[in-house]
Amino acid sequence: MHRRAIGSEAEQLACDYLRTHGLQLLGRNFHCRGGEIDLVMQHGDSLVFVEVRYRRYTAYGRATETVSAHKQRRILRCAQYYLTRHRRWNSPVRFDVVGLEGEPGQIRVEWICDAFRADA
Image (cartoon, one colour):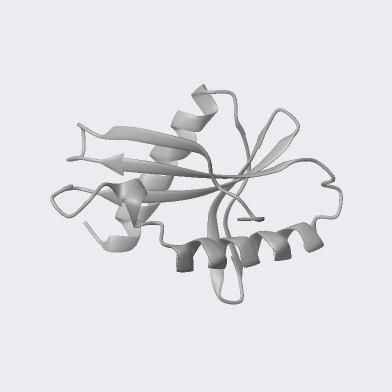
């Protein structure tokens, strides 16, 4: 399977998982200069920016461990841009990471709610 197709499938699995836990999808693949946010969701009154990571094998680490400090900064910059474009949001903002691991058909999901903060 092509890398982009795998990424799209992983994002859809993560989105479906989060929806079953009460989150509402607002957008996907929000691009800005220097970054992208995989999923933009709402959970209660919070705006949630979600990074989705997939690993078939975990020999070199878990999927959620691949969100480096550099990647976090890129997500934060993109989120700031999103907020300037969507001024109606005056609510709490959260950054979650969803890690998907395993072979297709046997995917394990790890959801880290509030995985990192803008003020850290």
